[in-house]
Length: 303
Ligand SMILES: N[C@@]1(C(=O)O)CN(C[C@@H]2CCCCN2)C[C@@H]1CCC[B-](O)(O)O
Ligand SMILES: [Mn+2]
Ligand SMILES: [Mn+2]
Ligand SMILES: [Mn+2]
Image (cartoon, rainbow, N blue to C red):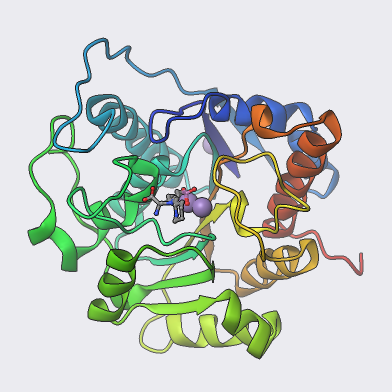
């Protein structure tokens, strides 16, 4: 697998999430992947053009920086996929899913998206309550929402590339009313935390994979927001929400997706070392992120 890390934070207002890739590397991700037999190529931190003037467009903040960074990321992910590798994006905030999914789709065509997150990240520029683009990435990618997306500077390169029927959410527990309306209108498959409690994670994964492969098996893009995990385990993140996935549920999700053999790209985003109140909180967050990634690439708890 090849991974590119994007120290990028302009999709949200808090400092420190651009430090995510370095702390994940420092926790020994590459070494642990080698230990379990993975061939790894670390493309290093992507460099992004400095955008000096970036006035909000309507309510949307940092549009030009986010658009430019994601165009660069899309090209990088395309290159990794064209090399025939599984792409791993270390964030950085969740606005990076725009470039990651766009680039993945440009290389492989139709794909399925499994979005593991406390949040739906499907606000349009006009519904967003905060203007932060990390709460909007899916709206730029879905065919069905394109009539709702205004022209934005540095966003004109984005071609919608995901169908609502090829998207599954797991872990939702903090969804804005407008997002809920969109999810219902589009009929998007959602396994909220209530569903996780009701069905159990094994059944959720069984239904997720059956749902996604019901028509045609497609490569899977896993976009994992570390805030899907309960903040008692992963507090060092920008928008923590109580009542999240356990460490075991998170690892079960990545182990299960690995077993499908369809995992084609992984995002691990929103780790923010400056949001941990103690070093122990940062380490708990980072080590969980590493273990989730190891699960994507063959680590089995039974050995
Ligand atoms: N929907 C949001 C948006 O800003 O659009 C609003 N929400 C914060 C808000 C706090 C008060 C109770 C309702 N929720 C954060 C979310 C984006 C999370 C981005 B992610 O990448 O971390 O998932
Ligand atoms: Mn290569
Ligand atoms: Mn989130
Ligand atoms: Mn997110």
